[in-house]
Image 1 (cartoon, rainbow, N blue to C red):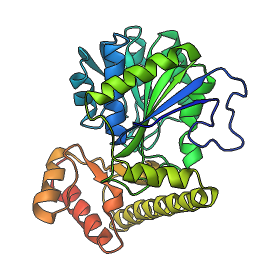
Image 2: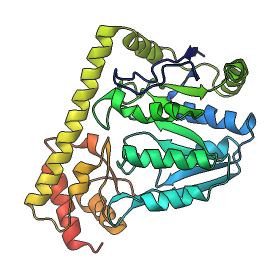
Image 3: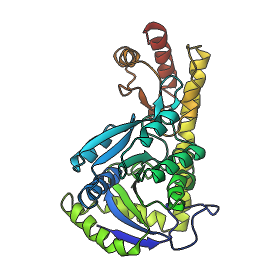
Image 4: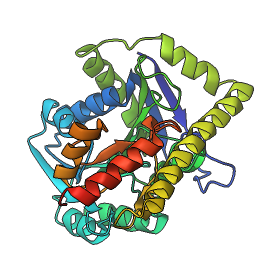
Length: 336
């Protein structure tokens, strides 16, 4: 298992205008993991086994495997904080703040940094500031999940701004990072877990515990994907080429979102479809009722999750018309 220890590194490739602290107020420890899933798993095990944390909070809705990862790590209690306002098709900020204000001190709160899965809705900088302030006041521990860096804004540095903000605010936290999507290495399980600490004396203990936890699970992650990532990140020319590739993927996702919305509006499909282009990342919470989702699947062979999450990256110029006509049909003929 590769372990990297740094002090005051640019957290996840900060742009030059970042507000990152210039003084040695924090240390970062990164360990190679089996993708972000492995990072979440060993991070949760560390929090449970070494820090005695028992209660964690997830967004409602969240990625379907988040809860299982924490419960299998030994956490005792799972709670949800409201995140999605189905009526307005945006973040339920009031509900989120109310739920977290009631969280027990020292609870672990999982926060997706960008391109939220499954809703595609991210807090604004002002909303992040409110969330961070509440978490500091209530002594909550942030566990950041960054699985889609680069797909929210098209800029990998900008998509990591939330991570740097929590550093700037003096938090100690963990961040799970995936290279599966933005490096096209989904089958290689390349990821990392980064621990941000304000105390250098704790680092050796964290390293030893991480080695024990990983050793009791999978010992050593595959090296092929991680070597590709390391080669690209440490070569300025390759790094810039990778940034351009991520931007190309982002632009294609935006084009598919725009194309789907335009087609639905041309068909005069009832309702507003602005949320398709206001949401970010690979996924769109399309806003259809369960019966309409089932109708899409059975009649038109258009597949989403039961909660309405659509993979925008699966849209192409050849299937956009079919998907739009299918949604139009479902909205007109199936009661929502």
